[in-house]
Image (cartoon, rainbow, N blue to C red; front, side, top):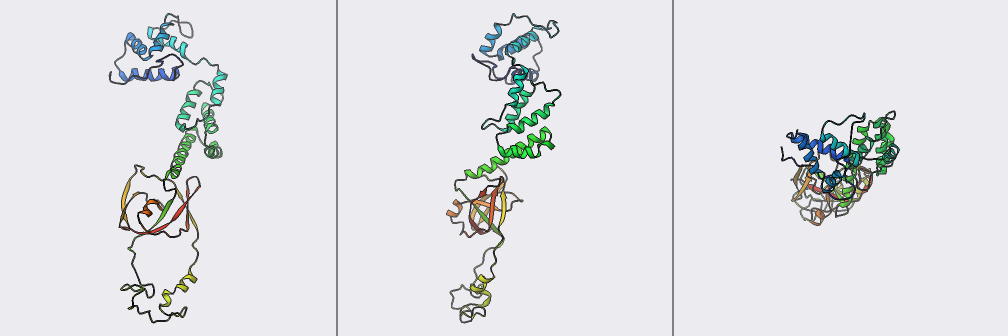
Length: 333
């Protein structure tokens, strides 16, 4: 199958290879297997030579007459095997075991480096460390925790990591990385704030504020409470059930509640639905477990409705408070 793409050249120009020889040769070996049509020794040599790159070919020509043998002094069976051995001697890491372990122990997550790439780099290093009595998995787990750039991740894993296997530590770090990215998206919202929407299932009805009837408003001369005296405040013009003074006296403070926002995205690619709120179409992410729905401030500029004070607080996954401009009471169509 010649249409399978070849690996990138190992050394295209003078300098140091960008990929360690062992890693690159593993990719090349997979390429040969995937092709399936390269079995002759001379064809393997030719393909390897082509994939070395211009500078890699030049360096191999300088060493191709060097004698090589197995570890016990026996001759290698094929020219392809001898070619591999010469290249391994030329390009393999020549650091001592102490230096390699020192490099592993001092590897830290680089700025902007994803957790998975950091773990992959540690895995490549640990294969050369020859940990025997001290288990490789334990060493890898410890170095992941020590080397993570995010202090909160390190703190969480230091608290729970002793009870985890190495794969559990990796999965926990990946989940926390994803959550931190989603929480960071809050800072990218142009409106600099979000609005909490309180959903109502019924259409709001205009009632007279003096008698609560539906056939007129509070300024109508037909209101039956116009000449009535309130039994609560003794003032004229409304019933006791509509008394502003009574409402104020009976109003109790609503206990402040906190909700956590785990994801916020303008276009997350997730399942969404278009809902009509106060006769305006708004796109929402479908989330049946959400405690609140949030929208941007520009929807208020488009006259979605009037704001009122919000007694609830919102926080990101990591606990930072989110500014709330207010609550909208909307009707849903």
